[in-house]
Length: 166
Image (cartoon, rainbow, N blue to C red; front, side):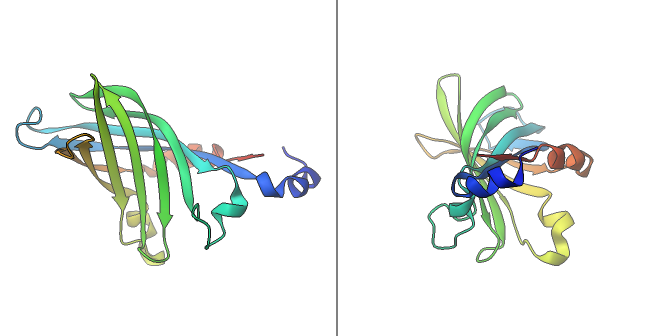
């Protein structure tokens, strides 16, 4: 537990971290891998190192979070380190974007996933479903498409992982 007086003194450098797990399936594009639905999962820790910048609308870091963790893409890689960012674009675009890169078998990949149509009345759907595209970074070629979910059974662990940092 961080004493309140310490928080007030460190407010300029106060941040947070939280752990999230998204699980689901992906399908390779034609001629990019085996046919059929395969597992896709990412376990990431995301957050902001400077909450003051994170909540200021004029900041370049407004509601943008650093992200790192591991990704499993069935028949491609398992528990491979990944790094990128998570963008909370609630106000203008009504979405959340996961952007991260990883390397597997000497090839660099880029993942871009979105939770879309975020509105107060559909949070159980919009905050739990992420539509993603995996590309080969050098060529931009689409390798696979995925749908992952934030499983509500993981909500207690998600909330318990929240940490203030300073």
